Length: 135
Image (tube, rainbow, N blue to C red; front, side, top):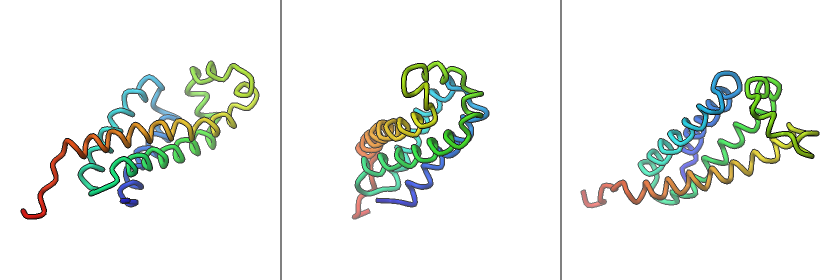
């Protein structure tokens, strides 16, 4: 595991967490995440020699921590700049405790995105050729 690389690439998640609170609308966010995932896959494939999927998965988990924490801490600001999120909080538990729901569902999204990043890292590792040890 390349923990330094995982942490460094997870800073995309921290940047997105802060940017999505005040500046980036949800419709732009959906465009930026795939680009970030592909960048992460490239650097994991280039910077690791094994466990590509696990390194990518951990980037997703670290991203989840940054994003969930930032959105929970600045909940009021996040919801004010994302009125479409309020429509998602219209049922049962989510309507009564939307911040708690965010903290509950954040890790589920982190796991799902970690799987996607992990798969992209594994695929990138198969595509990118490593220099041979003899060279």
